[in-house]
Length: 93
Length: 332
Image (cartoon, rainbow over all chains, first blue to last red):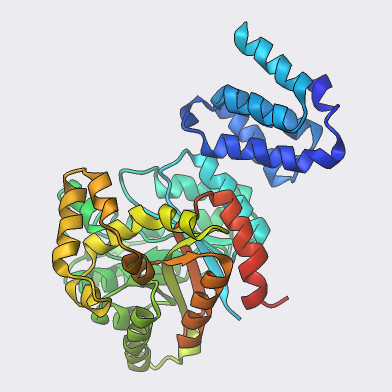
C-alpha cells in the first residue's frame, strides 16, 4: 500500500486525510481499532503528519479495519480507484 | 475578550478523546474539561493522556465530585497531573450527576458543606500543606503528600442553584455556571456577585465560565438533532424554578424523565421541543451561536465552555467554532 499512497497528489492529501479521519472517528466499529495503530495515528496528529504519505498510509490502514466499505467508497469518490481496488482485493481475499 | 473551553465525555476510547483534545489545542481553545462519571472511561487516565499529547491547553476534571472520589484522592490526582503538565491543570469540582451517583447508591447529602470542605482539602494539599480538618462532612487527621508540589491548582466550582453559585464565587478561583440561556446566566450573576462581595473579591478576579450544552453546524436542523438527547436529560433533571423560568411544564419534564428512567429513549427524545433546545443549549448555525455567546458575554461570562454534543460531527464542529466563532470574540 505504501507505493500507492505515494501516488496521491499533494493537493488531495489534506482532503483525503480528513475524509479518512472522519471514517475512523465516526465508525460504529470503534473497538476494531488496533491499539498500536491508534497510538501511531495520535503521534502523527500531534506532529501534523496525517496528511503526509506515512500519515495517509496509517489512516487508510485504520479506516480499512474499522469500515472497509466506506473506505473503498471514499477512495473511489476522490478518484483513487487503484488504491480502492487494492483494498477490495484485500477484503475479498 | 472571551475565552473558550471545551468538554469531552470519555464514553469513547481514549484515543478519540485525545485526538479531539489535540484538535482543540491546535484550534486555540483555552481550557479542556473531561467529565467524571464512574460508568465512562476514568477521567484521570483520559487527562493523563491529554497531558502527554498537548503542550499549551489547560485541562482538568470538569467536574469531579467528592461523593464518589474522596478529596484527598482528587488532590493527589490533580497534583500528579501537574507534574506531567505544570501550570496547565485546573480542577472542576461539583456535586456530580444525580442519576449516575444513584446507580452506585451514593447520596448527594450536604452539598454546600461537602463542596466547601472538599475545595479546602484539595487546595491545601496541592499547596503542599498538611491538612487537618474537623469538618461537617470530612474529618481529616493529617493528610499530606509524600512528594513536593510546585504551583497552585485553580479550583472551579460547578454550580446551578443560588446558594452554590454564591459559594462558588466565594471560595472558587472560577465558577462553572451550569446553564446555556441568558436568563439563567443573568440570574446566576446576581448570586455570583453576592458570593464575590462576601469574599471581598472583585468580579474580575474570578473566571466566570458558562458551561453550556453546545451544538453548531451549517445546517440548523442537524445542529438541533444532535442536541436533542442532551436537552432531554437537562429538562428531565432541571429544578422546577428553572423549568418555570422557561415556560416548560413540570408535567412535561416528568414525562421525559419517566421515559429516560425506563430506557424509552425514542419516546423521551420525541418530546423535546425547539423551546427546550432554546432554553437549555447554545444551538444553531455560526451566526445564531455567535449571537447567543455575545449575549452571555455581555451579561458577564468570561469563558464559554462548549459542552456535549458540540455538534453533529465533532471534528467539523470544532473547526467551525475556531473558524467562525473565535475571530469574533478572541483577540489576535
